[in-house]
Amino acid sequence: MAWFKRVEKGIVTPTEQKKETPDGLWHKCPECKTVISTAEHRQQLYTCAKCDFHDRINSHEYFEILFDENRFQELDENLSSSDPLNFVDTKPYPDRIVATQRKTNLKDAVRTAHGTINDLDLVVACMDFNFIGGSMGSVVGEKISRAIDYSRKHKIPFMMISKSGGARMMEAGYSLMQMAKTSAKLALLSEEKVPYISLLTDPTTGGVTASFAMLGDFNISEPGALIGFAGPRVIKETIGKDLPKGFQSAEFVLEHGFLDFIVHRKELKQRIADLITLLRPEETSAATETASNQAAVK
Image (tube, rainbow, N blue to C red; front, top):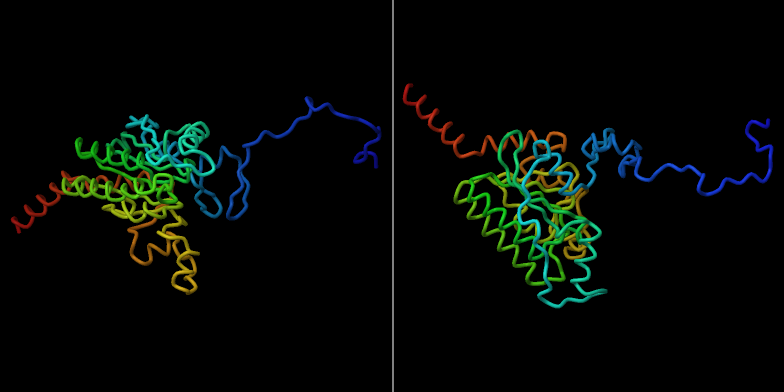
């Protein structure tokens, strides 16, 4: 029985000769616990092939999924937060910003870019939850506003990908002002009939939900995303009642009329391209003219 017992005693392998599996080779689904390789998980666009669970991803991955050949022009990439309130919690706000920038290689919680999706021009603003919980500060509001202005100037459809815990407490009132600022910019975009598509991902909460995330010509979501304003615990304590099952999930929100549809990440690029084609003013005008001509002939 020596084949499974060590015959020689005292054998020691030096640490430098030990072989271990490198970190990051495997991914375990948080929902169904299925284990697949990281490479396969990426090929599945960071969704589970077994249960369709959508992992949280950020701007780097969304740009790679949406833009043709991952080619795009990033807008206002060097904007960074200041410290208007001299805010200090466990550390000064500027120190927190610098530390988060080093950790994430991001300037702030949103990136904006212009590129093509199936050869159709699109401006995308995508939030990064890794940067202080995707919180909405003055830089987030400013970059979204500038991206909307870029869309207005060039008559290019605008898409917002929201992923946020809400307003950034370190900027207090400055953060809350971004709700009105971005909403006003979207009103101008609507007046000029430039399409706006809002994609809500997990999680979309707080002031982001109460402003630009819910103002799209189409409000869409990924499966299972948490969408709401206040958290379930706060709501339950406020109204004193148990909340319905699945409360604040994308499916619950869709059922109650706050979303237009839910789209799987693998279908996202094509569905967005279809919406752009549908919403383009020239396409609408052409369709209207064709219908009028047909009516005149009849």
